[in-house]
Length: 183
Ligand SMILES: [Zn+2]
Ligand SMILES: [Zn+2]
Image 1 (cartoon, helix red, strand yellow):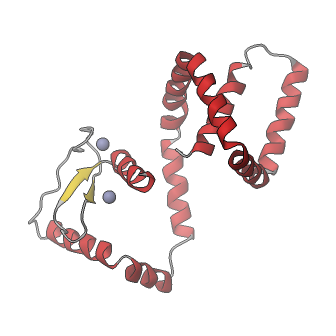
Image 2 (cartoon, rainbow, N blue to C red):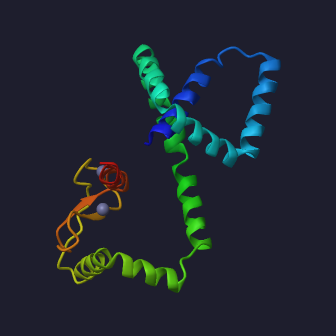
Image 3 (spheres, rainbow, N blue to C red):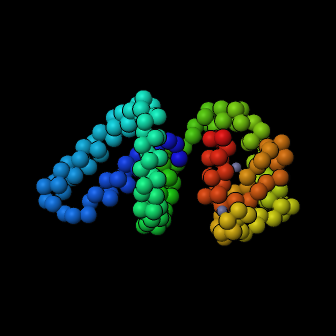
């Protein structure tokens, strides 16, 4: 998660902690805010990004302080959020993604550009796929990081070794690439 995303999440947590009592006027205000947010989503995102960049140090310092004081609360909130929202929206998310991919299928030109840009990657994937189809490589059933039984991705540490892969579930695979991109 990037700093500014983290900041936005903390902001949500703060807001959530204050919505315990129901006051009709407050509700109305919140509804208005929500609507405003929805309508001006891009603008707000851009603004908070800018704001974050300018006030980075102060925000990070404040967040650290806040986190120190409310650690338990924040952790339990994050856990709840993951259980309730993240997992319950999984199907919906994958459906949205599928629709998006169908609508935005890459053109031949885009595919070609990708193939040229990531020559080694594409080659490694192709070789691996063929070996699996020929039965030379057996795809395991469990993620080698978390042990979950699901669809697995072959992660290449080195694209010059196409069959040298670690088998990971989508989540563990994303985590690894996130780390690679942010180190
Ligand atoms: Zn996993
Ligand atoms: Zn990978």
